[in-house]
Image: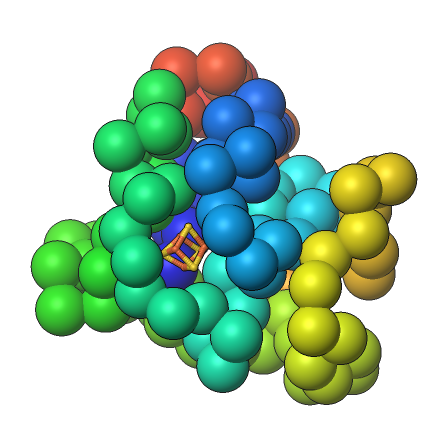
Length: 108
Ligand code: SF4
Ligand code: SF4
């Protein structure tokens, strides 16, 4: 899953690594579809801000991002592949409510 360090960074380096296009773009971060992801791990080393974690490795401060990644898809379901053209559905409310983040993940 993807956690807070991605917020307002969104360089999409992970998207190019995903073999099944299950990384979807919101307005302020990207989200991994929990049902479509095959846990191949290809995206994790590509992230420059270490925002991507296997569920079992998620730091406790980001534990809420399990629900954030899953919750992003409640309205769009499982499209079976992310469009390459841009954001698909805004953001999870927890992410939308965050203050603007600096590029290094710190508060702006
Ligand atoms: S672990 Fe693999 S399938 Fe899942 S989001 Fe990353 S690259 Fe895609
Ligand atoms: S590589 Fe990391 S910072 Fe970049 S879009 Fe993916 S999760 Fe976000």
